[in-house]
Length: 267
Length: 267
Image (tube, rainbow over all chains, first blue to last red; front, top):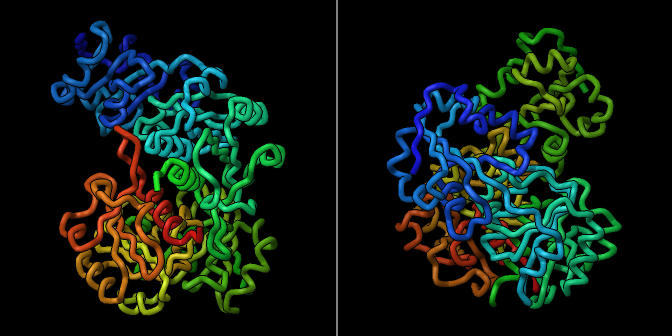
């Protein structure tokens, strides 16, 4: 483990960790920042699809994380700093004291992504999800219920945004995904790969709990306010989650969890 | 409608709206602040259990909201201000331009609360939920699936916190609740009222999807990290949501949505 002490916030070696919030907004060209022990554990696990590039830790955390960090390549730098230097680097108080810079997985096409899923795969296909909490929640649910992949259209936010990774409890780092897709092409591609493509939409007459399970299933989700575009719904089998009178409103992450539970449960 | 123009942020008449964030933290002694049009609509609906005490609006919003505000008692003041005065009152940029001060419903005992529920009621009983997003999410789901009540133990955060109300899409204002309960007394009280009391816990051997539905059902939820106390679980029927290997982690609001869907669906 290459432990390197950092005493100055402007040290060029930790430039990738500097001004985290500003760079969250502009993106990092193939890299992402992971924060906290839970996400670090996923990044370093066998299931991770991402490679750690560097670590930046509160020096008090190094010893306790030695076993986890030992899984990285020998040359991966482990930068350590005092809490105050850490805060100055990040640009805010980093109370978790743990940061990692990671490399996103290679971009996969829709076809490649689907080719890696089994005959009973359930996948999530999201359109226009712009909220990072919801994005993280959808990935967390996908991992919890063993979804084969998450597909995102071009109107979705970046799942590798720091907060989305954190809310996903690291699931973003281990879930096969295809991103930047055209929504209609995504639906057609799913059909071509033998998926039953279900659009989750409040206006559907078929309730989720009566929708048959088994085989390849794709759950298409839209943004909470405007919902899925009619052109997308028309190409799918619309399915709804019946709700109580006068309150026809579920969070999209909750809706994805209910649908994933339905299609992956055994009873 | 008593429309009163406010030109000075320190006008004593709008003291209840001042320094919102600081007062979010200290509480408001029976009052709460509602924010935005969606929540305002719930506050002013027939289903609301809360009374509006005053409104504070961006003067540009008054005309569009006249119909909604007409539902308030004639003497309820409608304060209007420019965006900059509004921001100075609130202490931050209030981009929605809509605030209401409301009165919480009278405190109900557990027994009174349960007496108002039917023979097939599903209620949510939460222990130690300290996160306002999760609290809001649980209430939103409770409303979406028509739960008869939400019960909170003394270790839960205040559901009338501004952000919890917002995340609940106003459900906090229309859901019968009992708060500040002792967790064990809550379980015993539910049993005494004829509820089947189910503890949602990852360690349970009985899967949710095989748990019989019908009759009075209480879903007991715990905090995400530590989970429910063993003493609570022991007094309940433990039920789990089966998850995929190696990722035994669901957000508590998502878990509540899945359980509520299971117990209220018709198929």
